[in-house]
Image (cartoon, rainbow, N blue to C red; front, side, top):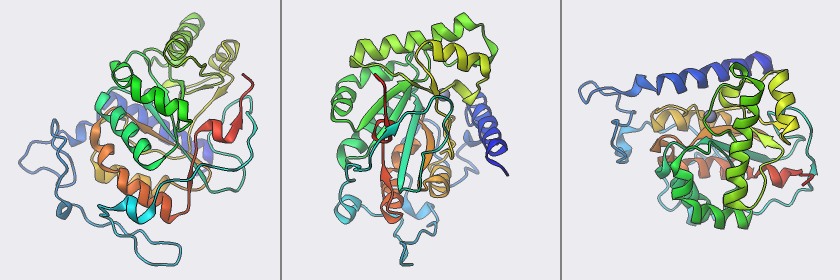
Length: 292
Ligand SMILES: [Zn+2]
C-alpha cells in the first residue's frame, strides 16, 4: 500500500471512529471482551486479563509488559540535540531524515482527565509531544496551569485543530478561516504564543482550497500522520498498545487523541517501547525552526 492510500485508510478509520464513538466496545458486562474497558469505568483491568505482547530489545531480550518501576528502569527521556531545519510549507506526515525521533501529536481534548494524564506523563518522564487542540473543549481550561508550565519548559507544543472540529472540506472558505482564527485566538490568549504554521485538519480532510485559506491565516503547514493509536473513539487499552507497538517507529508522526481515558493506562507501555527502540520523543519545534 503506498503512503497516500495508506493515509486514506487511516483517515477513513479515524472518521468512522469519531462518528461511531468506538461503539464496538460498548458491550454489557456479560460476554464482555476481556480486553475492553467497561464504559464508564476507568479502573485499570487486572494484568492477568492482558496477554503479553511480544516486544524485544534490540539485542533480542524480551521487554517485560508490566513494569511498575518503568521510570527507575529506564530513566527519563533526554532533551533532543539534533539541529533544526526550516519548517516546510505544505503538508507533512512524517519527520525528515533518518534519525531516531518520534513525534506524538495528540488531538481534540474531549476528556479533561486524559489531557491531565498526558500532562502528568510528560511531567514524570520529561516526554515531549504536541497537542493539536480543539479549543471548544473545557478540558484545556481545566488543565491550563499545568499545560502552561509544560509549554514554557518546551516539553509540550500547542498547535491548531480548529474551534469545533468541522470537516473543513465541507464548509465555506469563511468558515474555514473562522475555525482556524478562533483556535488561534484561544492559543494566543491562553499561552501568549501562536500556533502558526501548524494545523491539523479535522478527520485529516484537506483540499487545495482549505490549504489556501489556511495559509492565508498563517497556517501554511498542515500536519497529517504516519501511524495512529486509533483512539478518536473509545477503544480498549489493548488495542492502543497494539497500535503503539506497530506505529511508534523512527521519524514517524503518530496521532493520538485526548478523548477517552484508556490511553492513560498505556503510558508505561509506550515509555517502554520508546526506550527499547531508542526513540527520542520530540515536539514539532524540536525538529523545525519556525518563522515567527
Ligand atoms: Zn480531531
